[in-house]
Length: 67
Image 1 (cartoon, rainbow, N blue to C red):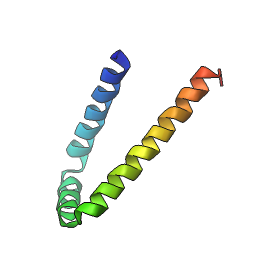
Image 2: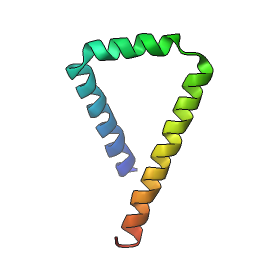
Image 3: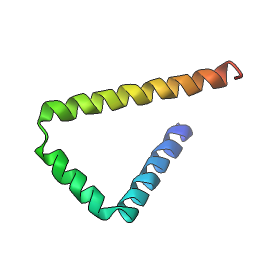
């Protein structure tokens, strides 16, 4: 559970840095996302979640097998 909390904290830190360094880019991205159809957002979210799941499993496998 502590790993989850640490990971969530890191995500929030990275998000904060992006908002701090690129506020105009975040606004543009939000406007663009608002114009996209729901289907595109859902597919994009699913693809990102699957990709991250695969990367986590890959790095976890390296740790388990001593690579």
